[in-house]
Picture 1 (cartoon, rainbow, N blue to C red):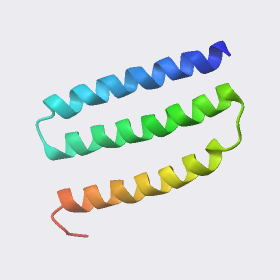
Picture 2: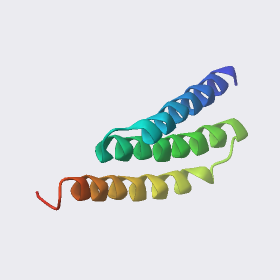
Picture 3: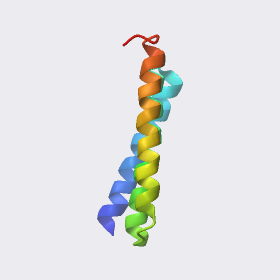
Picture 4: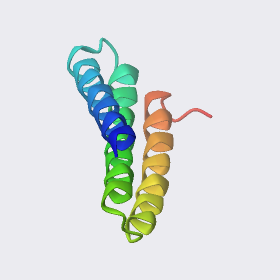
Amino acid sequence: MTVIDIGLGAVVLAMIIATYRILRGPSSADRAAGADVIFFGFVGLVALLGLRLETELVIDIVLACTLVGFLAALSLARLIAGGKR
């Protein structure tokens, strides 16, 4: 269980650093990257908590959230690029 606890701490630390990047980021691309890190950090936290609690119900939630997060990252990238391909 200590490896999972260390993983949880590392993900929380990454999310804190990404929050700082969102608040202080000079460009909208920095803010979008920080938002992606926070979202996928949250998904990682859910997955690690599912491992720690030894439940299998979390896998479906993580898969659905990952798909939504990937599509959101693509949308943010297109918005930042000005709609260009």
